[in-house]
Length: 288
Image 1: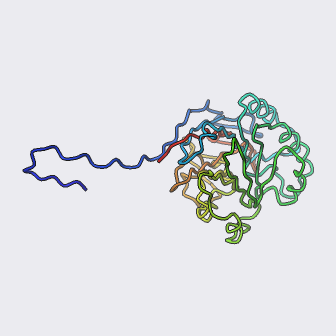
Image 2 (image 1 turned 90 degrees about the vertical axis):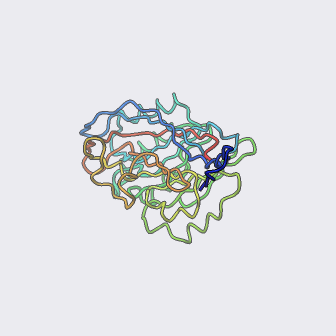
Image 3 (image 1 turned 60 degrees about the horizontal axis):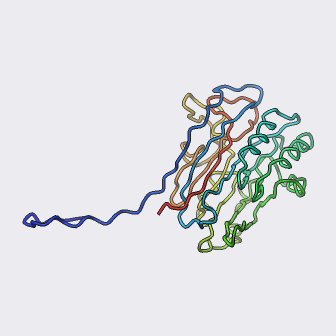
């Protein structure tokens, strides 16, 4: 606090500047339909620019396409053709998928050819990486072993660009209980000058994964509510974080929490005031 002497004739010194609070820059997407019945047909492409403290200059402007909750069924959807075309035209540097490739938990076989057809056509210069969701079960990890997506379920992967590194960490997403303190200890402390991005199917795993000190934490699972009130207020979120955090981009402590509304739908194929979504993130240097 600055105290002034009332008899002082000279102007007091200015208080020290406070550290800048990182702010997200977002461009509003073209809004999707307020009601979709019979399965999603289109999707929004939402863009955000996120300042990341200590981001190496080699990763300035890195563009990430975040996909989640595809919930692919036994029939190929036109939405998936549109997704492939849009990803190709946008040409992101990195594609990250946070689980639920398929809808059926019991039988992946009808959906698997469509999953492979999709991921084999999702191309990015630095690769396509993903984790599983609670609909996928662990058997899907074997089926996707030689596909266009590299699963990092419970693993760490380092991306290199011009002698700089960026770290990806995939948290287990099939069962919530799979994320144990032992799993978190496996990843070790952050390395200085190496941005850390955590992929998780469940947003509320952030409460335990905060010890990893991620710069970005990408998740899905909630579908943004899928069936919402006007204005997008979610009725059900299937998550223990505050309701406002079940969709969108938020600053939580020193982490950007990014929760996608997803591309598919589960149970009843209905979306209300909650269009499907792809999130594009552009990383910028700065943020204090």
